[in-house]
Length: 182
Image 1 (cartoon, rainbow, N blue to C red):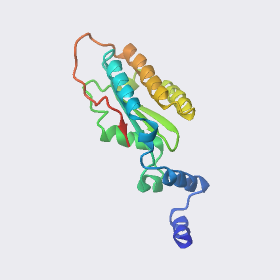
Image 2: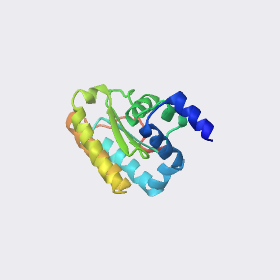
Image 3: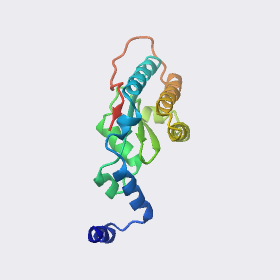
Image 4: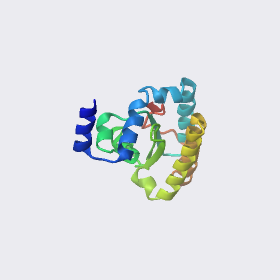
């Protein structure tokens, strides 16, 4: 094992932070997101997304992920970069009004990222999104996972209600309301 680690250090380089992050992700169980967000929590989050979307024209997608894959770790993919990857893969960018919002929770790194499509980004500053992320991270640090998720959805819903108010008629739901647990 020492030879493999030594070769990896020579090949990858990286400092203590790289290896500490790698260790934290390897030590975390693959089912971490399902442990922290129980079935009742998933149901409550989905209901909150559905209710929020009835008050505005935006689309929300909530994703919580446990440990990252080795390839992501090896290449130093940050939570922000992973959120961007999921933003595209889950087609959050592909809503009719370009008003999709992704809430990405990286449970092992203890980071929350919010990515908004271009129509929303033109109206809501990154400073505002970062503030919402820090609030959610505080709730998650206190192990209040459901509360943190519901609070972030509520905050986003308030912003979207201001900038993309409902037009009073039924519209198609473009993204799944059910949170994705990876």
